[in-house]
Amino acid sequence: MARMAFPDDRDTSALMEIVLVRPEADVCAAALEAEDRLLISAGTVAEVSIVARRRNVAEEVARLVDGLGFEIVRVTQASARRIAEAYENGGRAFTRRS
Image 1 (cartoon, one colour):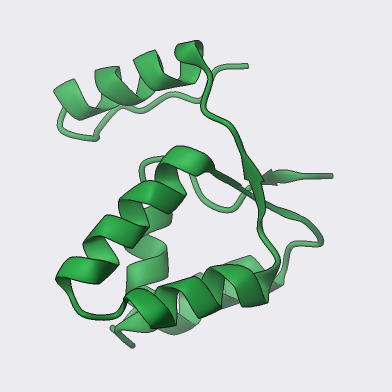
Image 2 (spheres, helix red, strand yellow; image 1 turned 30 degrees about the horizontal axis):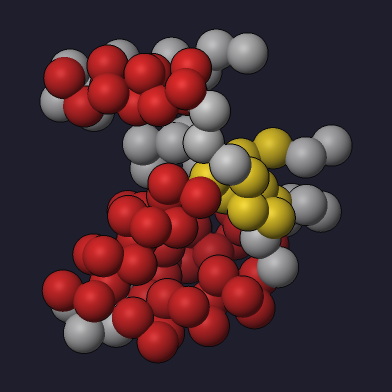
């Protein structure tokens, strides 16, 4: 079964945790490695790329995303609205809707 690697509001944080070798890096990596198929939104790829460039780890993030074999999915209008709602709530109370 395919699923997003983490809830949409956590993908960037988890990938940066791994690349920057922060305290939760092992937990995040294990969660990714446990999945047969990983999905990530195109919006999240853009976001993590921006964050990584600002932190001077863009190449490392690109290698991680490519190396894990993420399937990149497009962002729909409905998902973009949910992301905006989550942002308005400070990233809290993000509810996955189908």
